[in-house]
Image (cartoon, rainbow, N blue to C red; front, side):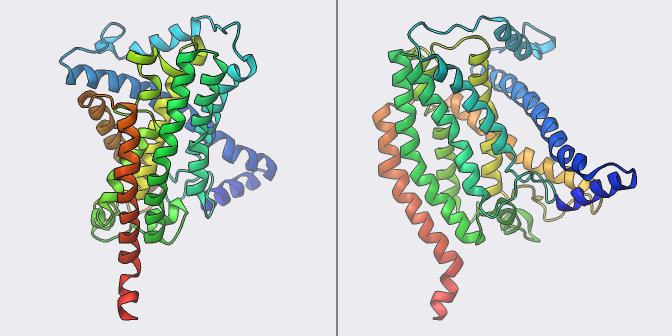
Length: 358
């Protein structure tokens, strides 16, 4: 990122353009590009999931708008934008309107922490793993505010379930992330990616020595995203629509689309922690130099994220929803002890030789 920045500033100075303009545009323009790309990715994700669910359940899926139903998601989004935004009379209007904003803004900020290539990261701090987790936790706060502010018992039940679910699955996920930090000796996502570099490609990824941690992390992310079989906060068979029962129009669309945006971001996060991030699975890139290397690195990251998203969709089609008691018991009784064992295993892998020599 610094290399691209200096090239850009040097180009502006040759044309007598102030550096302040370069400082602003260097981050603002890519952010706008990523925001537009994210909107396209989310729209495609919604369509792909509906098509796959139709295929898994022997249905055609969306097929009314456009060839093969390709424009169905855009039509649904436009329909929601044209709907009236209804606010219940007894709702807390300030918090009711604030909740969709809190779920939307941190989502874009979390994407700025992801290293898309070796030279392209918006926010590259020494502890950006922690920063990502903080930003990824904001949707939980917005869900709680949405349920509380709606003044609806079904919304409140959904919000309470979400809080209980996240608190239960945050602990195992934290222990798994600590195990990755031990193996990489860093909490920086770029350094974690580079720690998985190997001439044997995929054999250097942390998913091999920490296969248990990889599985636990994936399960915890499903719970964080309220995805099936952990979609209890919005269980339509019990709570109508859960925390967003009272939302309509644009505000409902924000909640709906943010779920898929966070699914995409969390899939990239898991890919960085365990699947080498932007590293090639073959140990070397097809392009040896130039800007095409960065595009290839981004391609590998997106491909790994796409595979994880496909597994999430497959799980939704294959597994039933858990009961709330089984969900909590599964975390505290099974995942938490296994995550602690995984952490000790990572410590032994990293420092076992030194301990044995001592």
